[in-house]
Length: 141
Image 1 (tube, one colour):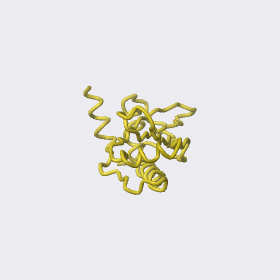
Image 2: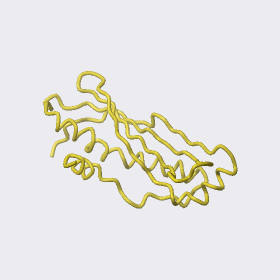
Image 3: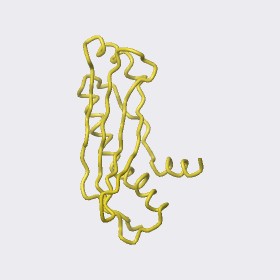
Image 4: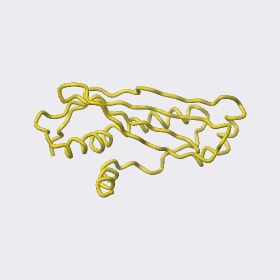
């Protein structure tokens, strides 16, 4: 199968890591395995079939009211879509499934490195994200 797009570049657009004080660090250390990774995708058409695709990853514990640490990365790919692609569904699949599946391993590596090197070496991502499966599930809903 021939790819219907080309990734022109990819980069970490925004990296945010906040631990306001030592008490928060200690609270985070005790609760880090309760944190969940949430992903969101947005896109913006730039010009001439060139699209900016952002995957926003947030690692947080929803039940903590105070002393929260925040880990967030926006990872961006600039993509040129094949000129022959006219169908909106095909375009959505590229933006929400194909490109994210291709770039996610690098985002995941960056994210795990940030969290691990920030004092939380026990954090791992056990479950791999399958953007194609998520895309198909969202089509049904």
